[in-house]
Length: 462
Image 1 (cartoon, rainbow, N blue to C red):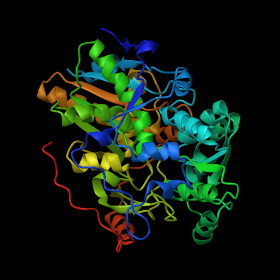
Image 2 (image 1 turned 180 degrees about the horizontal axis):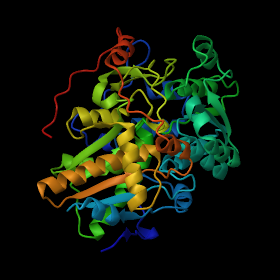
Image 3 (image 1 turned 90 degrees about the vertical axis):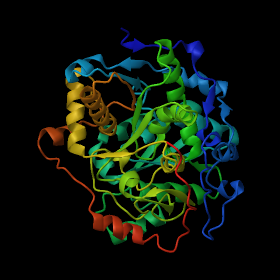
Image 4 (image 1 turned 180 degrees about the vertical axis):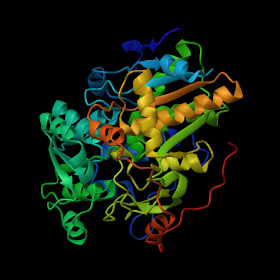
């Protein structure tokens, strides 16, 4: 029995996989303020053209530049581990495998896209990148990538996480980034929100508005914006996770797992592990694919499939996605990386097609799962990752009840060594079960009245 399934460096994937090539129905196009589809050139104020080309591509495979691979080799290929100690604890017939993305220098899956985004920007002539971050994992990853590639980095960190996670700020500073709490007084959108709600905990939507504003108002035009999730090219870069996992499972005689799980805030690590297997499902494989979100911010399970802005100030195009409304400010739960009002359009389209089935779990159950993980496997997971582990435990128990031997795969998206204040709050009994009230959802979605509606799409056979 292998506990660590390694992949040789020579076997690292050389191409990224693009699910847009295989979806039964294409993702509905992003729209401008006039309700008409935007053209690629309309994004050039925000992104370099080389990344815009990836964003709109429907090619199945896109080459990974050798210069990008040379940086990824620092931690890739990542090991596929079998959680035998959790299996024994649960007395389950299921085999539980996890792709360990916690071993990158910043400690999460985020550098898988931070590195190529910084590299493509440098090739384009960009000298400064702006971004947002929730829990700080994405901000840390982009700071790391920019330091290695030689670009300035400015990070707007959601205020509640800025206060809860001081060491993430120090990580960013160590790698040379400038990190400020969002909303801030450095942008017009930030000042407007502070004037209205000075005690706001902030949100990813607000932080995105600030980062985009600073990028597009740079008089020299050498600043661009980077997003750590949601967009097609981000999910494309993360596909290296699932592509490696496929090779590793095949090396121990498993063609496809029975269940694939990942936590999902904007969709990046979930898509990374799930999209290569979603392609298998499209072509006939029987796989349950589960994106897991917090009950406090349930965009996929209680939001609606609508056209909405990706940010609070409505600076981004309208995207067809499951959303709680761009003005929604989630409760300040400790899984800061999952506090986003929407979901990646590619993930949403896969849900619409019936290829993936989302699940929402309360933060208490997630921390209980994290404590079980620490007591069995020994590692301290990120609060975001605990959502995936909670779903894995549910599926393992289901296998026991059904008496079925199942292969369960999930993405261990990051460690929690910078998130100990959340663990402290749980251990001290300061966290409560929280579910987003219906009236809050209705109030937030009401602000989308008058916006274009996505076209009806027939659910697939899955």
